[in-house]
Length: 287
Ligand SMILES: NC(=O)c1ccc[n+]([C@@H]2O[C@H](COP(=O)([O-])OP(=O)(O)OC[C@H]3O[C@@H](n4cnc5c(N)ncnc54)[C@H](OP(=O)(O)O)[C@@H]3O)[C@@H](O)[C@H]2O)c1
Image (cartoon, rainbow, N blue to C red; front, side, top):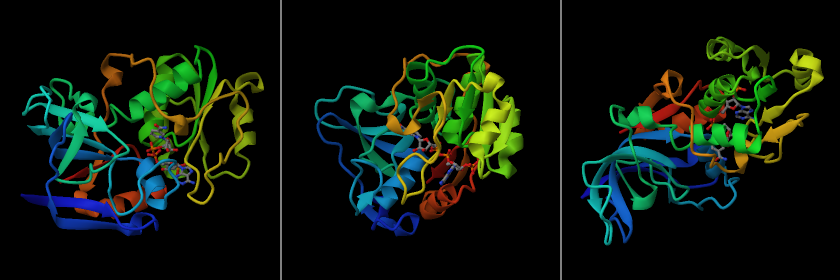
C-alpha cells in the first residue's frame, strides 16, 4: 500500500519540500500506532527544521510535519490502545505528519476530545501547552501584571493572549499592522507594531509604572537563532520546550479556534507563508 507524504530534501528551507505521491505506508513498530492523518498542524518549528536551525532536529531527507491528528488504523506489537478507530492527536520531532499516514508512539497519542473534529484538535498538544508553560510555570503570571506577547496573532500567540487575559494580566500584543484587529478582538489591551524600530520604547510607553512582568519571544530569523529582543522583566521563552502544569483553563474560551487550511501537497507554500509572516492563527494541512 502506498500514500503521499511531504519530504524535506535539503536545508534550503521551505523550497526544499517535495511531495512524494507513491511513498510506502509506514509500518507501526513495537509500541507504535499507525494513524490515517486527517489534519496536520503547521508550526514555526517546521520552518526551523527546514533550515536545520532546530537543535536536535532531523537531517534531510526526512518526512516533514511534527503535529498530526487522525484515526488509528493499526497497532504495533505490544500495543493494546488506543484502539483502531480512535481519533488521536500527537506531536513529535520525529515528524511525518504532512502525509496520508504517520506512525506515532502509542503513549504519545492523545485522544481527540469527544465532539471535536480532528482539525479542531490541532494546537492542543503544541500551542496550548507551550503558551501555558511560558506563562505559568516559567513566567509565574499573576493578575495585574503586564505581559508582552510577541507574534500575538500567530498560532501560539493567540492562545497566549487568551490565557494571559484569563489569568487577569494586562496584555501588550506585538503583531504586524495587518493583524492588529485580530489580537484586539482576542482581548489584548494594547497592540504595537512588531516591525517597529523602537519596540522596547513602544512597550515601555504602554506598561504601567514602566514594569513589564513577562515577555514571550517571537521566532528569530533562520540565520540568527539568538533572541531578537531583550525584554525587561521575566521571560517565558517559547523556544525552550513545552510542558506546563497540564491544567489549561476550561470553559468556552478554552476551545481552539478553527485553523486556516491548505492541501498537504502545498506544504512548501504553507511553510513559506509562515516564514514570510503572512499567516494569522493556526495553519493546517489537509490530505
Ligand atoms: N518550544 C516549543 O515547544 C514551542 C512550541 C510552539 C511554538 N514555539 C515557538 O513559538 C513561536 C511562535 O510559533 P508558531 O508556530 O505559533 O508561529 P506563528 O506565531 O503562527 O508564526 C510566526 C509569527 O511570528 C512573527 N515573527 C516575528 N519575527 C519573525 C521572524 N523574524 N520571522 C518570522 N516570523 C516572525 C510573525 O508575526 P508578526 O508578523 O505579526 O510579527 C509571524 O506571523 C516560535 O518562536 C516557535 O518556535 C515553541
